[in-house]
Amino acid sequence: NAGVTQTPKFQVLKTGQSMTLQCAQDMNHNSMYWYRQDPGMGLRLIYYSASEGTTDKGEVPNGYNVSRLNKREFSLRLESAAPSQTSVYFCASSQGLAGSLKETQYFGPGTRLLVL
Amino acid sequence: AQKITQTQPGMFVQEKEAVTLDCTYDTSDPSYGLFWYKQPSSGEMIFLIYQGSYDQQNATEGRYSLNFQKARKSANLVISASQLGDSAMYFCAMRETNRGSTLGRLYFGRGTQLTVWP
Image (tube, rainbow over all chains, first blue to last red; front, side, top):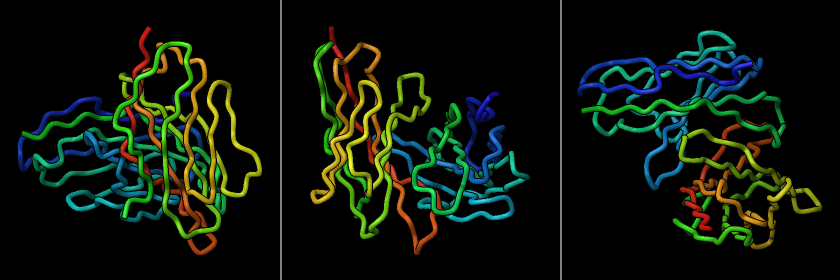
């Protein structure tokens, strides 16, 4: 049982390049999330998917797109990377039960992205 | 306005002592949940403890307890008998309900870096 996995672990891009961050969970969770973590800023929500087939913007969606490929997989795409997107990216998942305040979000190990 | 405020960028505590990490929150929802996560230097996010807004008692999980003061909108994490392995970044987070349905998203504070010294 791997939980939440992310690939790649590290990536260096040049400004203007594109890439896709992959995330998969094996916990049969309905909801999945993408966060970015910057020094002194905590985690900020980029996009989330409450259930398969739906995606919604979070706090900082500009410059990103997402795809909920199926129940297990939720990818984050940078179409034209910018230095401001240098960050650590975390994918998370939760059961996604309506009305459940208590459910825990489980996080992947993160992807460190450097945009030059 | 920030939904979660952690005013202590860094805290230091001696091994075996207790330490309190502060967290205040801002919400108009009557029903919400509060979480604490630990992030060691290896980077993973580890769930520690949960407190619901209607819970009658403060949450406890082993050496972790949550000092929940609803009127003050604070949810401070107390770590008793600190260990060297407790050195990490600690994040407070909140989940709100939205018109009766939970979207599931968490709002995070900026974190407190805890250092435990021998």
